[in-house]
Amino acid sequence: MNKNPAFLFYAKDWLADLQEHPLEIEGAWIRFCAKAWTSDSLGSVEFNLDQWARLFGVDRPNALRILTYIFSEKIGDFSEDLTKFSVDSPEKIKLICRRMNREEKIKKGDRLRKKESYQKKRQTGSTNGFSGDSPENLTPPLPVPVPVPVPEVNISYLTHPSFLPPGAAEEGVCQEKNFQAKKIERPAHPIQCAEDFPLELQQIFDAYPEPRQDRTAAMQAHRKSIADREWPGLATVLDDLLVRTQLPDWTRENYRFTPKLSKCIRSRMWLDPMPSARASPDDPISDIAARIRKETQEAATP
Image (cartoon, rainbow, N blue to C red; front, side, top):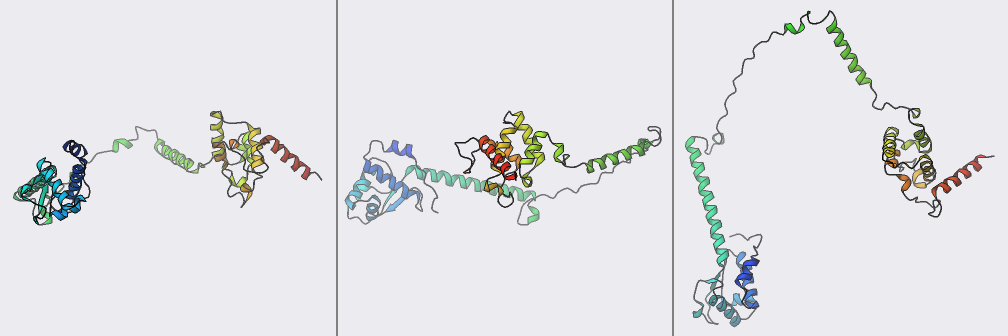
């Protein structure tokens, strides 16, 4: 028999069977069960006394003593009477675990019943002509579909001139074509220029780097922020942008690493800490922004 991939650990049964026995007997029995699970004959092990001694980790007299105790207490079944064995006996001793042996017999019986049931179904199908060695006999032939004649329907009454005024049908077709053309020509983003946005957003567009402006998405994020009562006000956002646009992480590689404007609004950028030396935690953002504006004005004044 092949090696089993797992070992069924009957902890509750083992504790009940060996509850009042010495710990040495319990350990020897568990070692035997592990060996019996991986043996060719599941549930039994047949060793001579030297092999039993190596399995239990003791010498020959103690191995015979352990086996005799298991035999006398009827913990397991033996093929021979151990009273006839001595320490010098060369014969093999076969120990059987009743639970494993019983379950293996049940599994073999189940496999045999399934095999007989399969053979019976195969023979029954063979008598009906739907099974055999040929592949085309495995399934019954499908019926050939018969075409069903479709009766002709007179639809002249649908286009009768008495139902519509003259030229109404042609006019309806033209209106449908014009409607489809208008749908195709409709732009995906109706807002094209900055003047179409609210004045508050226009001022934010002027302060934000143009390559990273997604105006339509930013307007939607702006509306949601106002609806959720998360918008801090235009002055706070402009001060934050004025300081952030001076950071080297934003300005390098033509604002490649600058986040989109809509993402900044959704993530409430003005609440994030400013990773810059100019944005000291001791100074508020408004003071830093006022200082930057003053320096810009002084630099622009001749």
